[in-house]
Image 1 (cartoon, rainbow, N blue to C red):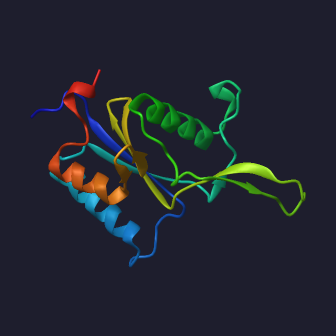
Image 2: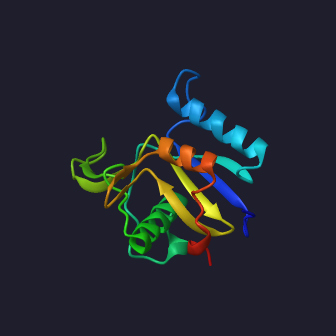
Length: 154
């Protein structure tokens, strides 16, 4: 089936590049193979830290880029009936500067965001009504060509 919009995968990672023997390296290698084979049109890598402040109740243009992505992922989850937890777990942290504890989001080691054109169509890992969808599940679905559902695309 011909795709009506380019499929791109944004790989979010805590560190880039991961060590060669790390499973995250194998995921990146396989995604690059899928890109070379034309199964996906673009693969890019972005780096984030271990924790981030939750998206604020401020306009999107005032949030940092990672908070904006988290907000986008949460909107996708709400739209699809999926949850980002436990991969994007909330916890309290203090800093070396202040003993005051604040709520933060713990970011996963690796996350795949799949887009059809400019529309976010999948985030892995996520939780669904039937269990957890992992990064490995995403790669398998990309290999099979079924991450981007034609009926779901606008």
